[in-house]
Length: 339
Ligand code: PBG
Image 1 (cartoon, rainbow, N blue to C red):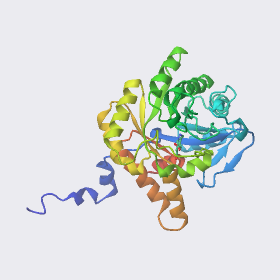
Image 2 (tube, rainbow, N blue to C red):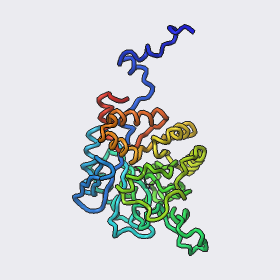
Image 3 (cartoon, rainbow, N blue to C red):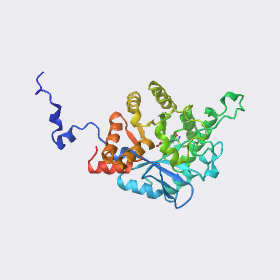
Image 4 (cartoon, protein in one colour):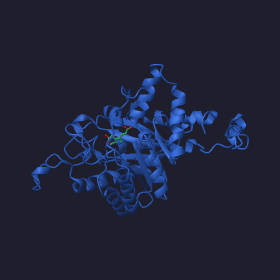
């Protein structure tokens, strides 16, 4: 074949042409910044496991939001961290009217009326054992299941938590617990309260990932015994992701999250292809921490790796990217270094 006929390099010769033919366009509108908020006041605690991230309290959280808004970020995902003394076996601080997330949302809502406030709905930060749901005590005649998380008993507690977040002023809830049927339970509870416009961004595909390590230190939510493989997915599985996504869609999810991002780009692509709703990739704490750590050692160009990883998620099919680099990425987009 005549090598002169098709020469892909022709479209790479100048920045203008590269921009013209770029396939993946990125916008700060598609970014979501996760933020950690703990009980107390005046808190601005650097998170050791995630250099550059800060734990706020409800009264200081606005600083974190304002900084990101200034960079162009419009959407936020809140994680709550209760005082240790408020943790119990069923995680009741998760749905308390004066809980940390509820207080934080009420505090920042008036100052940021246009921000999209999404709240993570899970029990692991609030339970004394650190699991994402109610742990079986064997009393249901299922002694063999002692120590397992009881799916159905957990649903009502998640629904209560979701309702309390929306009542406080959140726009959307993001259930991350991985109990079966929780999207339907949360949808029904929200509708019953008249919150029919509150959206659900469900962690439809969530693997039992080693990449969550830094988060568990940040949120103090590591399981006290066992692990999460009883409810989070096995990362050897691909078709199972389609099943999880289909179930969440059927139950009323408005946006589907795939998590983690970097090790699951095939899944992002699959979920995008099979669903008609927006797909969000969650670039998790371990992905963030690895980039920061490698850059701190001088091993990689942090800015470049950050941009390339984000572009990869969108190229795979994500409509939305949840990332701790949201502020930096929004800046990079504004400067034209990405997108
Ligand atoms: C709570 C939850 C976790 C993450 C989001 N929601 C931790 C876990 O499942 O152990 C991880 C987020 C991250 O690592 O950035 N269930």
